[in-house]
Image (cartoon, rainbow, N blue to C red; front, side, top):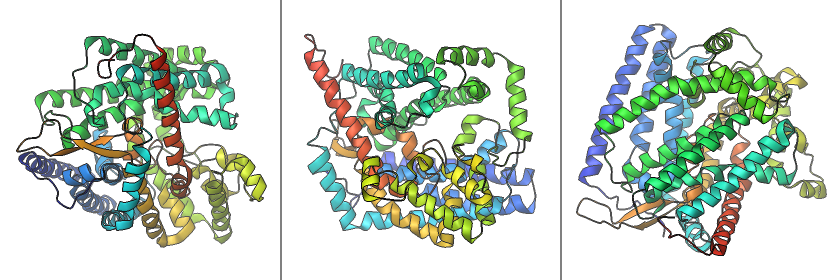
Length: 551
């Protein structure tokens, strides 16, 4: 069944959430003003005003319970954009006693681009909600295609564990068998295995079953122990791969899914409580302390990744994590070194990834430096990047002018730096770009309109990742139905939240938008369905099969 917002459900809980939203927005606004007064310069004043306008607009639109329930993923995309470009930067910089313009060359221009794109983003979402065609396509895909294929069936706990084992096996093979050669292996089978990596997070769905539309039975002590052991194994494999995101993205998505469940009503828990406040403070301490140290340690040993086996990388990372001097020296080096491509914004690597305005700053700087020939070359490479989603045999058969090896191993930032400087060493560096610089270089100030056009089909496909179920506990102050996520996308909510940003797997060039429509959503669908029915068949072959909920 498709969700509809024509008669939005309102309750006392909704009014309380809206009141809390207003309080939090007021506190955040005061924080922005406080930072502006602490670093009182004309540049900071302009940036503070633009931040306040963008933050208030974005939160007022996307932090609405009716939209989050009826258009879950697309509304989260808008919320994540607001978080990355408006809400988090002043918090991240003030936490380290820095101005929001820290190490930015085009600070005011960044927020002008961010605000203009936000306005087009809000307009695109409004058109999407009013479009009968988009609604019909979403309903047809959800009801007539995905539901019959079992896309929204909730696996048992044991099946979740098998699904996680499939992803863990694929990741372990990449780390411990292929080793450093995995970066040069471009075969279809290798890419297929990489696409299975997000399966490793599926066992954590045991903790958020209500968000998936299943009964909210309490997790037994046995399954808590299983998940704890599984987490330890996943952490070791992630450290062996020298990848921070391999461990953090899934767990962060789990937290996002839980918060969404509380707001939407799927999870019966108080969002604002002393217990949750203590957990939030503890999480911030971990992010600023051990998690940040681990991330820095991985960066320190990354230069030796090609020369060391995974087990040696793991050992070196653990040793470096206890070397406070090495960690501090690396952070000071990152803050003072000058590169052709500088990505330093704040010291904390986790917060810098979520709200790093330096990605946009570097991309816009290169876009402003490009002449007509550089822009033409960039258009050609970006178009090749779009066409590269086609299989190589199809490209060869059609005779398409695509250098698949080049565009598949170079990021949007690499392509911008190469076309601006002409330096071939810029390629295959995987520098993180930004849709601001990429869009402005390709289309000028028309690019926000191009993004808005591309987002309408993307919003439609994104919201097909959810369906709705009847509320098992209806009451005078509860909704008659609840939104339900597909399991695979519930553990990928971090990617959805920061879809339009440069954080993690976000869109760091304009080419990423058509690539998602043409291929990425189909790939996700096929990967999950193949893994789901394979794990289902494996479980059926076991003589003793545990129950669906208890596993």
